[in-house]
Length: 397
Image (cartoon, rainbow, N blue to C red; front, side, top):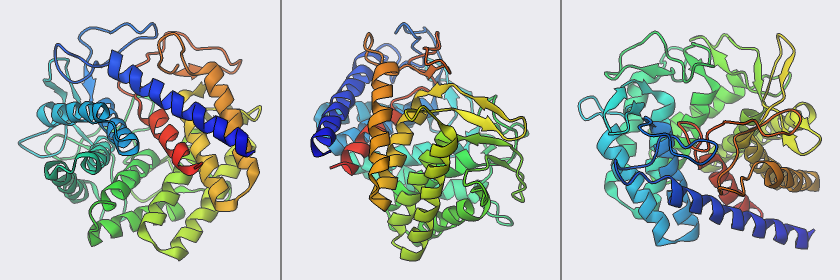
């Protein structure tokens, strides 16, 4: 087992290098600044594509985290580029917060304040502060935290609403994407607020921030996790009435370790124990219902229609690996380590694009590549796989 684990770590290290190299070599927009908004499945740049806050903040987070892990100056230079571009073009100087989308020349085209996007800005600016120590980055993160809580927090029912307009006023269509339900609260936004606040807390031990993290953890334990089936409910009304019948296997297993990380940061042993118990249930339920042939994760299941979306998405496969590593650290059960090996073999075989150096986006139920899916776009970023590789190398040492 020890030799096998060392071989796995070497493979993960090599892939982290390949991933970072791809984003350094192919995604930098030297003409208009920042990074290209889209690169297609054949590694061709889609000219004049718009640029999203999520893509840019996730690039910033990834290269900041990679620098913090590897301590190589060229990685910090990419993070510097991302930070300066976000600050220059996405920041709303009049109202605070950050725009959702700009055109290829840097002009705002979607000015809404999607709380999911604000969360990733806090997350990336906090990680960047760890890398460079710039007070400006930390101050942005602090100010944005206060703005998010001032404008999006539901004082009556707790939790944060999905989106507001550029002036932080209410809007009708608050969906994160076209496939999402138009409901005021979602698991996804709250999960990524939790991860961003946890990272901010690691550099700013503010008591109000502590209470917000604690409150989010309790929302997951009391409102979001289905107590009977151990999965996340996805969409909610203001009063936490469940408005969705979908199960997202990738989010369940990603959330299992992010909740654990947040509880560890607070240092409350009783809360941590409760979170760890739920994390294991989330992982075990996913293993029982969401895994194909012990080596890959289905996308989602609709409890109402009983329809399984059996496609495999790149991001959920690597999040599963971190979830298994977290479960192994909690229980010391080797069965979770074996699943990491199995998933990594599947990823290497089907998701890593050896021709271009990036990762394929989707595999169908027959484990065949779904064609014409972008290598880089608004949502296809280096964050999930980059973070997973770094997390696994830390956890398996």
